[in-house]
Image 1: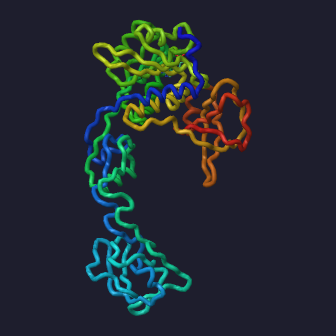
Image 2: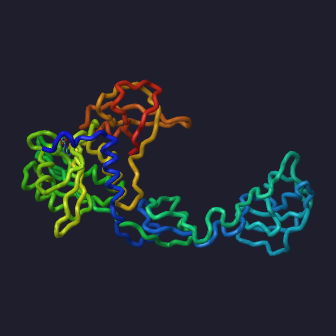
Image 3: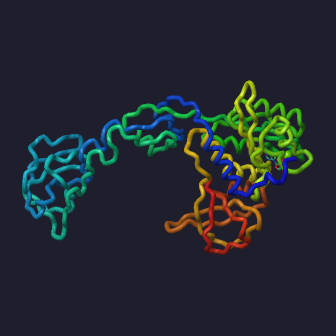
Length: 411
Ligand code: AMP
Ligand code: MG
C-alpha cells in the first residue's frame, strides 16, 4: 500500500493538518436568533452600537465627590440612582452626591467613595480615618470598555454565555452564524452490526459511528451516519461515493496492514491524494489523512481514515480531526487543547511513539494533577469513559516520575 515514508511524527502530522485547516475557505452563513446561537460560530463582527459604558459609571454604592476635596466634611446635596441622571448643577467644592452602583456620575465628580468608607452625620460625610480616595476611583469612564463602532467580537468567535451577553448588550437580537459542516461517517468491517441488530457471538456493535457522531456535534459539525461498509472493495467504494456531498469524510477501521484493510486501496483507486498514511503515536498509528479530488459534481473532499479500535478512533479524532472540523466551521485555526498537569503516579513511556493515554485530571485549587486510567488497550471503551483527558507522553522519554509536569489533552 502507501509507502512507509508517509508515516509522520506526531508534531509533523499535526503541522500538516493545521496547514490544510488554514487554507480552508469560509463556510456559508445564515442569520439566527440570538438564543439559537449557543455553541455556534459567529460569521460577522459584532460592533458596539454605542460607547460602553455609555456614561461614566459608578461601580459602588457611595458618594460621588471631587477627590481633591476629601479631607471633608462634605455636604450631601442630592442623590442619583441607577437609571437616573443627575439633573442638578456641577458638583461644587466640598459637596457630595449620594450615588448607587450603575448610576452615571454627576458632572464635576471625579471619584466615588464607598459607603463603607465614610462616616455620615446629618447631612454631611467624612472619610473614615486612614481612608484615601484618588481621582477616578470607583468610576468606569464612558467608552473605556468599548467605543461606539468598535468590533467587540471578531468573526470566527465561538458563541457561549459571555458572547451572548456581549451581543445582547450591543442590541443584537440575531447574529450571522456559519453553517455547520456536514461530516460523513463510514464504519468499515465485516464484524460490525448496527445497534438495531443483535450481534452474533463473533460480531461487534458499530459503536464508532455513534461515538463519532457525538464528537462531531461537539466540534461544531453535523454528523451524517452512512450504512456500515463491509470489507469488500465494490461496496466500500460505493459508500465512499455516496458520502461526496459532505464537507468531510471520516472512515473508521480498515486502515491497518491486514489482508482485509481496504480503505487506503479503495481511496487510491478514487485518485485520492494522501498527506500521511500513519502517525508515530499509540494508540492511533494507522491514521490516514488525505483528499479526494474534485469531480464534475463535487469539490475536493478531505478525509481521515481512522483506526477502528474505538479508543484509537476517539484519540485521533481529538488530535487531528477536531482542529480541521472546527476550522471548516469557520473558527480560527487552533490545535488540540493541550494543558500541563502534574503526574500523581510515575509511569513508563514508549520510545519512538507519542503516547496518548486515557487519564483523569483532578484539580485542587493550586495545581491540576493527572493519573492514567487502567486499561486493556485501545479497544477499552470502558476505560476511555472513565477518563476525562489524555496524557500525552513524548517519544523521547521512557520513564515519567511522580511530580513530573506532563502535557494533557483536554477533550
Ligand atoms: P480495524 O482498524 O478495522 O482493524 O479494527 C480494529 C478493531 O476495532 C477491531 O477489533 C474491530 O472490531 C474494532 N472496530 C472496528 N470498527 C469498529 C466500529 N465501528 N465500532 C466498534 N469497534 C470497531
Ligand atoms: Mg476492520
